[in-house]
Length: 237
Image (cartoon, rainbow, N blue to C red; front, side):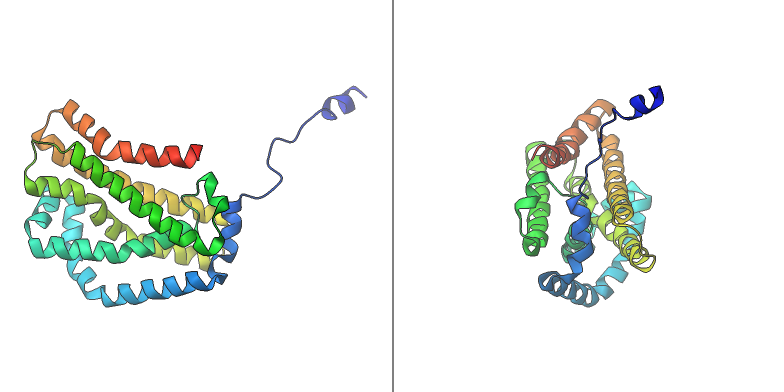
């Protein structure tokens, strides 16, 4: 009798409804607007494929050496091609983020499903513009033009390097019919690692010309501040 009384007084702490972001994953591809955008994205990547292949040695050298990142910026043709290619791959990135609900603030529930991808694209562009603003405000005076361009454009380089891994992961998720939660964790982890590698490379470039403390302070203003604002939006809004 005593045991029955103990176990009778429990309360349910877990939510009774599934996470709405995961529900969205199940019917994301059923929306005609999303299918059209995916088709456009595939066409753009096919058109850009030769540029992407030609860029790959420079991208790999940038990932392997901080000097490689600065050398890429020294070549105006390569840096321009990298920036244009990153612009092409921005749409697949937004598709991936929206498809797996990698960034889903609370206010997203008020956005109609057919406008979710457009809203994700707008939010991604807003984060990039905020980052540019931080670079304009906290620009390190110790860096030359090419070194500054290297840390400014680092995320584009690592986005292009992460793209094949993201696409392969999406294929694995689809083929093995992994759960939406597993897909969410995988995609978020890969995006986070790409961002961390970009931060590490920027820190190396800054450390060559700044003290250790200055490097940390610059990274806080240039990279961690826009990231913190984004996270705050996710949590509080």
